[in-house]
Length: 120
Image 1 (cartoon, rainbow, N blue to C red):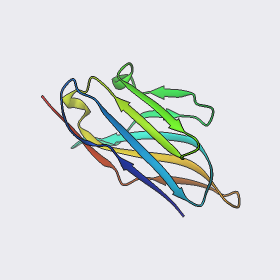
Image 2: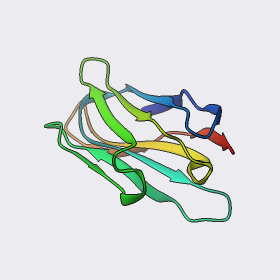
Image 3: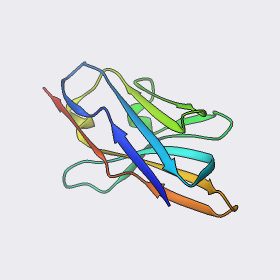
């Protein structure tokens, strides 16, 4: 019903930057909260950042001051600007969104993930 597709991952040296994007498509009427999560090798998934429908952002302590989440309402897209990257940021990054479908149903969608690798 709803597809979320991430892009922008890759290999970067420590101290570098990447910008992730996630586009929602399908039976999207509107989108409430949008999130970025990550799963590092051997670790459980963690919430990295979230942004509400009104644009209020929140961050995990580990990324505060380095990452910035934003969204484009017209494009149903959420971004994650990642600066001052560290090797510890290496993970698969996933986006998720709380979507309101045409017809009024609510749906929690997830993307397939994009790999971010930070070399030291």
